[in-house]
Length: 310
Image (cartoon, rainbow, N blue to C red; front, side):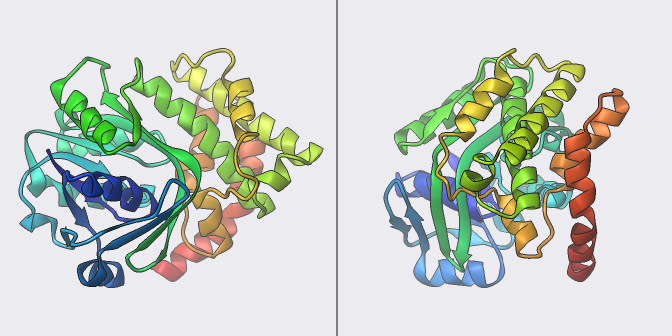
């Protein structure tokens, strides 16, 4: 398969790097100093699962010059989805599938509006990784996992072929029975740890071990769970308990990407995570006081970061 990785940060750099290292045909989309470093020295990935370097690496900042892809992994921040979707159009073939690996749950709908629903899969991943320098990705925690599937949960050859590529690369991958439930289970987890982590500004080991912030964490999970049910997403009854237990297994130093962005004064996925839960809570008349506290506490800094970016 020809796989395009659109966005070569912590997620795209790791998963795309593993695919390329295993011999798959991978084209990376990157820009600026990151692009130049990859062209000069390859893609370096330091990982708790084993360090590796991909060199030479096929990378460009011009998607219009890339041949049609069999699969495109979309690994940009949530506020770049629309712009990225428009750039993806020249790389589409009749059977190309686009797999969004964002932390929110709205990406498939946003992509379908531009690319057509027939090109969009649901997708999610689990990993703690980030770009530490141009051409250099660091994977610091969480066993890497990726899942994807057709939005109507039908079996398809393109999803099975992509699954085989990841399995050959030694990456834990899955086509869930219900991709929408799987995406919301990820959203349940990430919105809670991102939000509580961003407000407390400490790693997960600190806020999960203190009674007050642990209660915030559990309440945030429960609020998201209630919103999911109202949306018609049939999450298992034990989802909150199981997610909290999973959070307890994380390395104490783990920090979510949104948390890192906020601590470092960058624009973040606040709107797509905690903000989205608050908005959906209003629509369905479901109280979301913890997510509202997180969202409104962080919104002034988010607005400042975005004004500086503009």
